[in-house]
Image (spheres, helix red, strand yellow):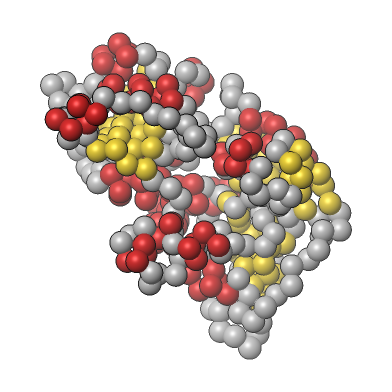
Length: 346
């Protein structure tokens, strides 16, 4: 089969004869239709830990093969979303609601990755991370299930609810999705980014957008009250400094994007204590979050306008990656691994 193989950070080659994954009992083979490019696929330090590898985990496709002796509740031709990791559900971390730290979550994976024509979905994922997609949901919208699920987990961890006020720092693809998830929850959102195009896109869906300057943020802050939530959708230390400076009594400051390894964040611990500011991080998502994301997208209650900006065929995956690294008018990039087809269920 064809696959786009990352052999080192920023170097990707197309393999025309990549080994087809072999199914084990309970597994399902999915023909990949589309795969979104995640920000983690673009972080050199993160990719360096994985190469050589087929990246891609925001997968939409169709069931191509399964064991007919097993009752998956699936048929060949079913259109599905594939989740990348699955927690055990029983360990100490899972019992504490920290499933994304579960050893099984970290070690489980699809094979080889979404930038390929086919992926093997292990049996545990079939049971907990494979979702039927409604006919009316477009493939491009469905690639947002996983990143939106991450945002929904983040806002739940932060305790965001209707009537709250949030500041989102960084309006790339994740900042846009997180902002829209907050708006769908009834939260008022101010978003800030260096790039005017990103601010314009956010403003079109109800975000009050401003430049990342203390005076601009102060001018748009809640009158007489602190922010309930400040979400850092970029891992830059300057963004953290800006967000922490904006925090007030009782604010939650959430790291939603990873700083590089060894990165140091500076803050006034005296303010942290006396203002009871909560610092927290939110990483990835689990099956209940993907279910919630699918429901929100399928209902149309979350506006996805403008999120997907570019689409490339698999043979141009390297160009897709380089495009995703750009800023200017680029938002979310998706790769078409195979042509969508109206395959009947069989």
